[in-house]
Image (tube, rainbow, N blue to C red):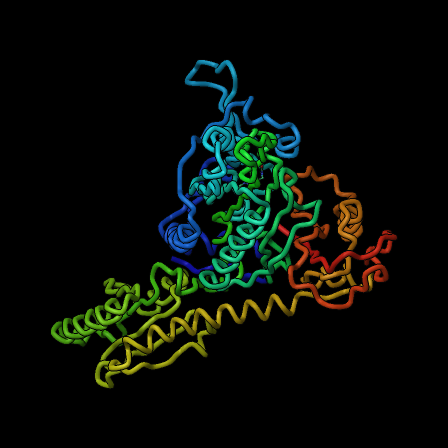
Length: 516
Ligand SMILES: O=C1CCCN[C@@H]1CCCn1cnc2ccccc2c1=O
């Protein structure tokens, strides 16, 4: 077993691939854009699912399962909804050697699968609010460079689809869900995110507005969309005829039926890729304790050939005892008694896997009644400590919480120090080239955004004749979100849009950045 043989700061894409493979998170599959989630990453997704599922259950959301397949007619129900996405739809055209009369789509998302049944099931306002969620996988046949977890042709996610009597009911839920998404990142993955709204160019065109949590990858200086919660307005209920009688109508009064107000919201296994990219280092994965399959590993040390079998037995027995103490306080603790491997070899192995805390235990520790600790989130030379055995069941949980908090604090400091508030256009591209995202006064129009993207793309990209799908990720800056927390400094009717080619007034501070 060898370690990572490329530095994160030297060749990030290669580093990322090695960290995932050598950290035993996934394996590559013979179909491009598809990956195998091995237990280490499945555990993380299961933890996130358990946490988020409990939150939405408290909101009255129920889980369900709709079919994987969408008929061509149903998928194309509304041209406007599908036109921007048609190129990504994967189709089933044969059953065995028999060609199907009409091809069948594999769901890329489930609006068109579910909403004909919402129209059938929702008859009265008493059927509202209807709140259903699916934990499933979807397929989008992208041609851009696939990236494990970040951009894959099949991915696992949850997709929530709700229907409400009023816009107020929908609006409230959109933000509740977004806050749960933000907490998945901040509380479980130790990843800071910015909450905001998408611009007209970046929002889900089929909806009314899109709210989003945006992350930041320090290694590349790129923003990344972390999860979206859309208010669909009445667009889909008008498309699918999802109506209820107006509850305010008097007994004999005839009122027009009401179109319901809908939301849809999704969070995917992309969250795992974000966590790896932010916390990983040149020794491999660094997994935040709250979602780490192994939180503590105990490695025997100081076991020499001249040690008697009895002494070795005694040491193992003591170590097993320590494991029991930690398991008794719900810590996911393993021991590494593998014969024929040195402690150093074992340290590297568990460091590759990102286990957040290692305990070393040998004759010295035994005699002194303590364990030697090593934190995975700190450089080797700063990582060591000691805990008295009598303190183990309180000090170890505390140390794990400290590691969780420090991982978040470091990532938050990095994010904050790479958000540049800019009002002078000449500083925009240099800031991007310095791995920053930029907060600028902006008019929020799609046309202006297109200009900013072109103005900020590196010249080389525009002239290069490399076919689109091999080209490196775009160097043009896109809008990431309109932050809910708006700084001061924009004088309505006075402050101009930052784009020099735009003559419009600034509507809000808008976060721009190169992105995934
Ligand atoms: O984000 C979410 C959250 C979960 C439920 N769906 C919404 C919106 C999905 C937008 N979208 C995204 N890619 C697509 C690809 C092919 C066909 C349709 C679509 C499509 O509608």
